[in-house]
View 1 (cartoon, rainbow, N blue to C red):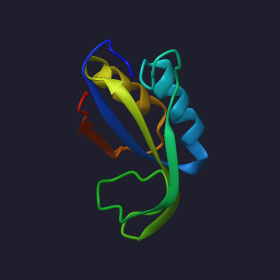
View 2: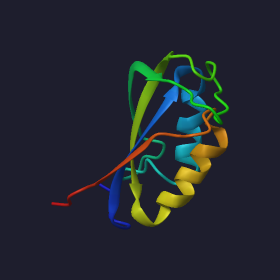
View 3: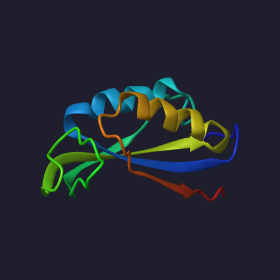
View 4: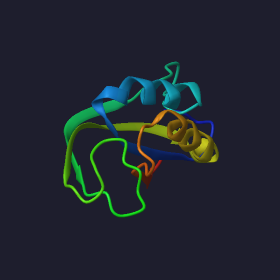
Length: 109
């Protein structure tokens, strides 16, 4: 595993149409490094659902309507001190105005 710094697991949800772009941004900004490998990630396809409220500017769907989007859950490892830069890089290429991130602490053994 990466011994550079404290690691977290970063998860982001993205429409399948933008998944490759987001994976590239994640790797190019320094996340996804495991040993002598970079751009490491894992993805699962699923369905994202939401309802845009007044004042929102949805990339997909219309305000007030329920939306179903084919999305990918992308998981990767990230050094904690690079997390803000990685999340910023993802936001730059992600189509949603509100990007859903999960961040989990990782134990080292």
